[in-house]
Every structure is written in structure tokens, then in C-alpha cells.
Image 1: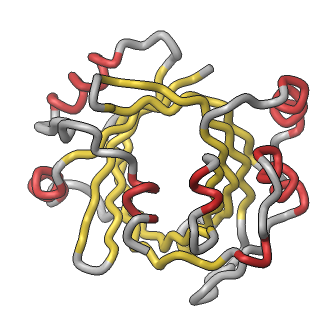
Image 2: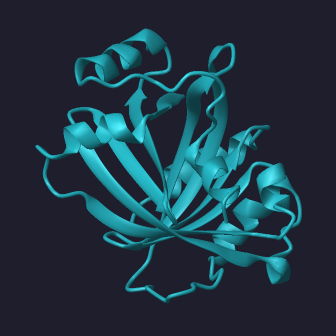
Length: 210
């Protein structure tokens, strides 16, 4: 299984580097959950991204996934949807830790409603329900989040803004046995360092503010 390494970095440190880069790709991000964040609690993420390459994604983090279904989705992905099975590796209080994650993404054509509805496909609804029933009628849109993204070599950088607060996440895809230290060295090569402690991820950061 592939690994996606992710860390948060200081927004000010990234701001010093971005001036020499091409203009970022800009999108608006929305999540869907209940007021009690029931889906977040069970590791299910429903997300819509508007703007450049708009899409909608159902992601499941942690737990187990039916082997047969994973094989079937990998075989059928193509024009209708993209399926990914990988491990998210991030920095925790005791060092890097990884969590299995599966996602199903479908492209959207011009769905730029100011407040989007949870119009997920039947396949995505079934996918989301693998972790338990989804209270679709109780979901509400959580956003908007202004998202900007850059590519710096093999690194992907994304900055999210909610109100006056900003978060910057840097990620890199790697083989499952790639050492964490290689990722940290790639960050250091451009003058960045991970935030210490259990900084969490950008989705958790955003949902705590919406």
C-alpha cells in the first residue's frame, strides 16, 4: 500500500517561499457532517471541492475494508471515479504514525453552488455507509474554506484559510517502506520543518472551526 506523508508547517515559513513560485491553484472546500460530527467520529469524510478541477470525495480513515471490494474498485476505476487505498502517515506526539485510508472521488462539472448540497452518487453513498449508517438528512455543509495549492518538486503544499486563520500542510506520496526521514529531509531542503507535537491534520483543524 502506498503512503502519503503529511505534516503541518508554520504558515509564516511557507509565506517566505511562495513569492518565487507560480500562482497557486485555487479551490473552495466544503465538508458535510452532523452538528455532533458523527461522521468525523467514525473516520468518514464527505468533501466537495469547487473551482479548478471540482470534485466530490468520500474518504474513510482507519478500521478495515473488505478485500474483495477493494480489488473490485481498483479494477473498475477510470472515467467515472478514482479509488485510492493508501496509508496516511503524519506526525503524532510520539513520532510518525500511519492510518489506512480509502477514498472514492468523482469529478464534478460546474457544481459551484454557493452552499452545495450533499449530492453524492449511489456508489459513494454505499461506500460511506460501510462504516455504519449515514444520517444523510441531518448533514449540513461546513465551509467555505479557501484552499490554495502548489507543487514544489515531489512535494504538494496546500494552504487553507478560514476567517483570519491559516494552516499549511505539506505532503508527499511514497512507497510503503520509504523512511519518514526522507520526507523530513525534503522539507528541510526548502527551508521548512514540521510543527512539533500532535498538530493534527487539516481536516480536523477545519472541522473544529466550522
